View 1 (cartoon, rainbow, N blue to C red):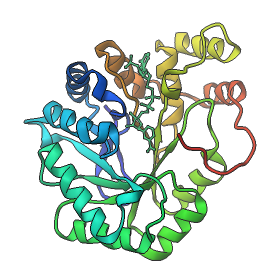
View 2: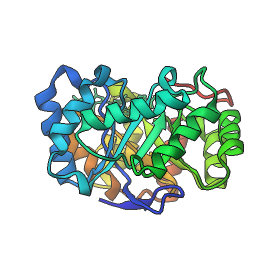
View 3: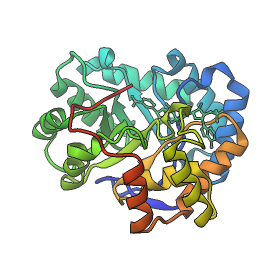
View 4: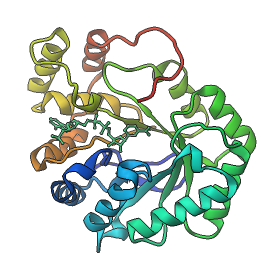
Length: 279
Ligand code: NAP
């Protein structure tokens, strides 16, 4: 697996990681898939207190048992819990469910009603106490990123985790340039469109199939390779199937050249400038 510098954290992190949303419905398959992914180097594990109301963090705990030190473990606080004291309590509850004493990264899941000053103060306190190594945000548009930067100062926001797949490239207009200018990692969530992947016979599907053939890869590997084509980018596909996990893990090998990138950009146009979409 390829490792990359993750924003300002000084950590080298797997460019393809593993998502865990909605994994609570098949806990055994989910834990087995996560373990397989870890063996294949997908050591960047993304979870959240929201997922299955905490049950997914318990599944993750089983999957990572005995392997904690090899991981880049990420969880998220829900906006409604993200007050100064609520953030600390939520993090401690996540740590208990995950069976670990620290998170590598803790994110605000999306902007909410609690003042960001309090959330960031709690993040900094958790960091000083060794309960998290770094913190970041998710679903933040540029105005919200600006606000977080004004409050925290430079070099503190590790990443912005955002919706990004071939048919949803809105972040490329303003968020990616902002993150790159400020040394913030960009983590693509739902990178396979939540399973709604271009059909093989669609125009876009045919472009992906042709590129897959020339790169000895699969269309999904080409799609993931496109999403991580910039050094600031990471992706966290989710799968409960061992074969899919292996396919996703192999995506980093397809090093797309400029011509391949241009073909994908033409088949899946950027679209107009608009505010940040989220799931
Ligand atoms: P996704 O990873 O884009 O797609 C998951 C779907 O794709 C599943 O149905 C999975 O089915 C299928 N799939 C995965 N690999 C495949 C492969 N190689 N071949 C065929 N099908 C494949 O969607 P996601 O779960 O929404 O996003 C990924 C992660 O991002 C989440 O799990 C979560 O951790 C994070 N996320 C964060 C936010 C946020 O607000 N911060 C929002 C959404 C998601 P199988 O299980 O059958 O493989």
